[in-house]
Length: 156
Ligand SMILES: *[C@@H]1O[C@H](CO)[C@@H](O)[C@H](O)[C@H]1NC(C)=O
Image (cartoon, rainbow, N blue to C red; front, top):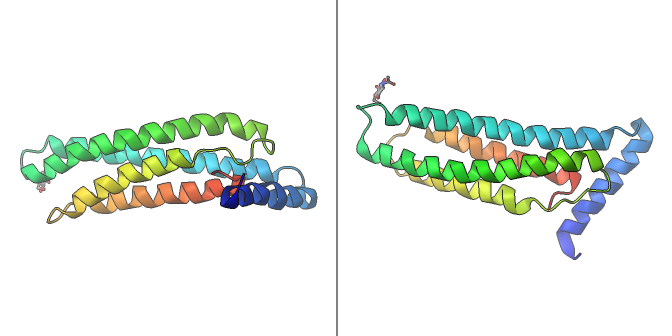
């Protein structure tokens, strides 16, 4: 395995493995808990945002172009949510098998989620003023954080 993913894998094994000897065997399992929880927290944010968009779609005073953007966003969020669901499902299994399962290949899933959220953010950014733009940016940032935390256990 060439390049960066392998280094991440070695970081996972090396750094967390070494620390294991200092503070006990638990650190790698703790790291995997953070990775898992970060995904669940991101997904919780999606749920609330989609709820907000559905609520806005029911509001007769909201302009048509804003509603059209929310409809697109709901589709983007479905894709992001599906990707993060697959991620949490894999992590649920992987974290029990660490450290042997450091370096699980889930980067495509995180990136798919980021792509969906980024598409929604860009649609809302074109509107004169969307109260949900900041919320979507926050979902994007949390997902990015979840991805970066995932690097701790060598996620590629
Ligand atoms: C509906 O949208 C308008 C305009 O954005 C807003 O002022 C109003 O509070 C919304 N109504 C509800 C029930 O959210």
